[in-house]
Image (tube, rainbow, N blue to C red; front, side, top):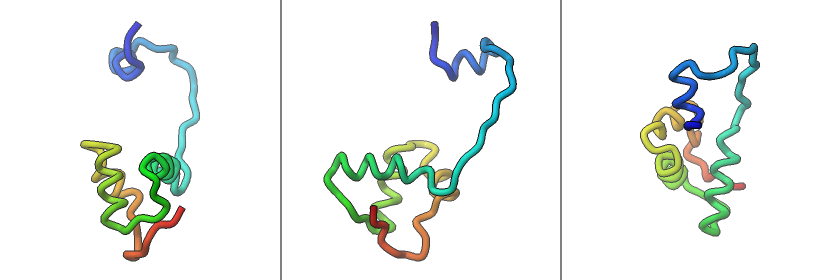
Length: 77
């Protein structure tokens, strides 16, 4: 048994049709959990960026590109 990503990269998985997709603002579920963990209910654009980068690490900038804070407004959850 191994990590799913390792098995997939090795081609060791069942080859069946799948449907994949995304929804607009799906990253907010991760952001909301992170905010609740630290007791915050409102973020500035800079705080949003810092949390996304901390949460997604090396992929953080790609996530921010796809899901920018937008319009320099505060994000309220």
